[in-house]
Image (cartoon, rainbow over all chains, first blue to last red; front, side, top):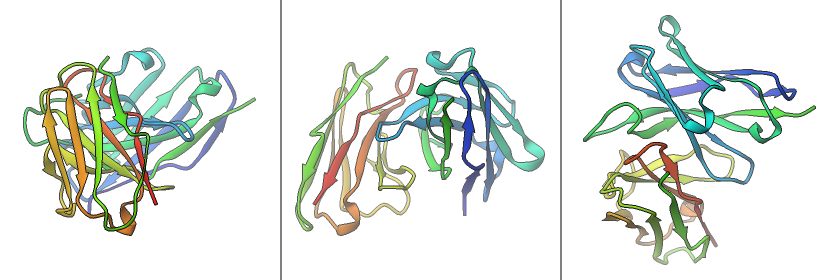
Length: 125
Length: 106
């Protein structure tokens, strides 16, 4: 079955960077975009952007432009999200999600199904 | 940025009752709206996409309707496992945005 398995929890100091991995299985990794969404404790969901694992192209929500980078390693079916200049407000669970779309589909305009299990990133001095 | 407003914030119902959740967009999103379910400690799960299409494996008691700015998720008869938080999401415009969620509790 389609599965996304993310790396474990991280604790970082303000100003540092974090890199979260998302390993895909059960489907052809390069055929579907990977999106990243985060959720602060007790809060709603916030979309960060998308990456096309085939081409490596990506798009970022303006809020994260300049601080986030999506990459991938197609040899091991793994996507990565790196967030830099961390601040306390970045403390959240970070999810990767496989793109799902039936009509009018294009990168950055898709649904999310399924999701990874989430990675808690804590930013604290 | 398209703002999605969900109401009510909390819906207190009993098993077997009908649940009606609302999602209102600050501008038209055509039919580019989805609903997700998130249970405590779990990841979100896609329920409905393109306003009214059920995702694979989603029971028929879940249905979605609406277009433009007003959308509804209906759970026809609540099962114990349906008590969760429900989010709507639009893909009409960047950035993709989510509503604040409706908690359905007992």
